[in-house]
Length: 289
Ligand SMILES: NC(=O)c1ccc[n+]([C@@H]2O[C@H](COP(=O)([O-])OP(=O)(O)OC[C@H]3O[C@@H](n4cnc5c(N)ncnc54)[C@H](OP(=O)(O)O)[C@@H]3O)[C@@H](O)[C@H]2O)c1
Image (cartoon, rainbow, N blue to C red; front, side, top):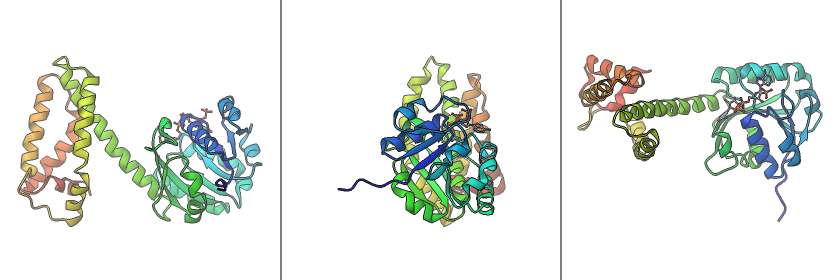
């Protein structure tokens, strides 16, 4: 069997994520050139066969597809603006977390310099990269995704979401919104149970099982929202309002701030005040859009 032929990759940025990506590429025998603003972060990668470059311009003297995994949108421009001419005619995959509008701006900048552009949103922490739980969402130039798919799948599952270069970032940030709300709820609950001497780790184990079970219902929530039919016989908005009031006061009774719950409680309150108390909890989304 012939081994997969990978196009070489130039990784710009060796923070925790850049190092994990470059290591996974090397583990799959992808030829890799690396650069980092602060020297010294590529030693392990060089031991694994990567070539270290001292500057972005030197890195771009290697052949291959460019991958940026830098701090933010500003650091991408700071790194690439001076080497735009060297990037012309090449393919660039941005895995730096940027907002949808920032990703679209990068795509316009790339086009104005004759650079082909694919944006990506990494749904993983560095330790997950290259393992079964990692996923990366992509949008932008489909032919870059198609021609590099085998290489991209060495990082995690790879999914192409469309030609709009901002859509991968949009879905990425929407998923992160859900994640942060989950963490906020965990912090609130852990603070509540600490009043009874229950440790955060013990509560974390219990919450992980509970939240995983509850998360199974999300596609059904989505089906109701997409249908626009919010009639229900169970757990309508008025029921949710009394549940939120009870949970909020239970927290306050033990001196715990209700801030993590205030947002969702306000949305439910407004729906009930507008006369939708008999309709389904899923109607809360109408308060947001
Ligand atoms: N870590 C995660 O769990 C995770 C998950 C998903 C997505 N991401 C995204 O991946 C990207 C990198 O994250 P990370 O975890 O690797 O962050 P990190 O460990 O903080 O590393 C940041 C990287 O950006 C570089 N950098 C910062 N400012 C720069 C500038 N002005 N010019 C050039 N280089 C600059 C740093 O270089 P120096 O070493 O010189 O400071 C370093 O290589 C971020 O956009 C992050 O949102 C991370």
